Image (cartoon, rainbow, N blue to C red; front, side):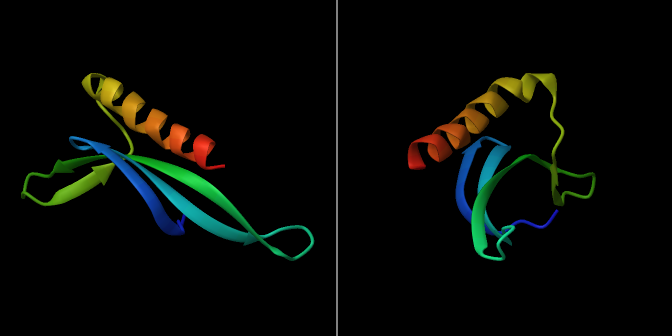
Length: 79
């Protein structure tokens, strides 16, 4: 899935939630904007290169809950 423009990013350690603004055509053919949220965990591979994953360890769930809650709060208050 291709994302639009980054609007806001929430991070704690290696855990991130990123809000994107996307545009599509609605049923009338007009531009319609909507937001998506991606969750990721950053880590280094065996060669020392930074990678991202959408999966997480159980120990990362409290941090995931924080960044996802902040993304939801941002979108709810903003709209």
